[in-house]
Image (tube, rainbow, N blue to C red):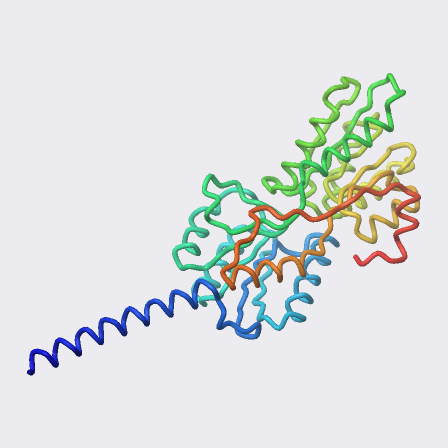
Length: 328
């Protein structure tokens, strides 16, 4: 009798354990028990290097505040080591999802594996990582930077289609090693390379900042006084270039044409004023899409590996028309 009772208790305990395991697995995979207020997201931002980034940060913070989710936010001040430290902190805190915009493309595998091993899904925003293991993140939300470079290059090709003289180009690159800097340069070069009259005579990083764009342009104009076009990887560097061109006694938009990427308000104003000639849009308004991705991930739903934002381009006339209702 005693043996039978012990056996029954053991079987019951075993079944209860199985039931308990099943319930835990279902909760973790579906996230059904998680109310928005119980969802915690850690976001590691690049920094505040430009007007675009400021708008991006505000949109993400506003979207999560409206969603009711808890957002833990960190500013990496454009340093990879700061982002890695923040991500490890989020892992230790046991957040539900980690999202971040990588400062540079490489060097993330170790910390992303730590997140994966901890069972915390990672979403990349704005910038991608260069990793052979794409299981280290669940989705990338952002722009097609190569296409942005191609759009800028196509405008240049069209603008100078009837010119036979060399078109000498100064390129202001974004942060060295950053995905947008690498891809925008590649897309631009691929489009203009078919015509040998287009010559990139100088290319240097301005680190996506207005001060950097001004400083680099000042130096490059001295060594390349016959340059007639500046391609800046973002508006802020282009705005810095305008200051340098004017300081050199030349007229931006006429003596030296300027093409940029972003379409933030200051850039759009300069385009409307004729100091910039063409802007390729890169939208920073990723907050609502990121919230939707987080909801699906926590609920155990599948999400697309690459989610692109819809973007356009602007001429002077289009910028003037769009400026009054511009959100950023």
